Image (cartoon, rainbow, N blue to C red; front, side):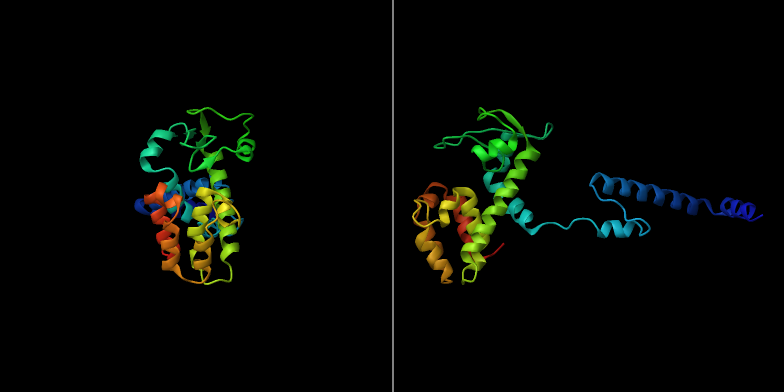
Length: 228
């Protein structure tokens, strides 16, 4: 009897309501499918909203890299030349004055990079490498650069410049903060630590780095103040 009443109730529901419920179920199922493809399982018995709440939050470290560092390493015109969107690959390219080629957003193909990419030898210019693998190295190296920069400026009046210093390390290597290195920015670092941002900016401009890559380095130097 109860089953009969339920069937009759469903039949008597206005068509728009049935249609709305049907569409809602499709949207929910589709969204759950998207979550599954992202590796996020819907918590049992907690509903869709709980699954949404469980989604990973954007990483500030990754966001900064994507906003500033990545585009500076591989601009829009270079992306068209060295990135194949259809195949999801980067083309290896050779920078003037470098002993080895580079790929993606500033990934210098040193021995650790070759190992992480599963390459037995240095690839020739034009060889295509999966973008996902290359980007993983980019993010890891950016994370390392940021940790080194924060360590260098921690507890000083220049801590606000950590992101910008990390950009310098990512571009030029850890020698930027290693005393005795030919790339060490001795006076710039001293001024930053003393909180003399404007003086540090002027000092950084008195370098081969600034003279050789004035546009890019100028943008980085402007972020010594922490503006982002």
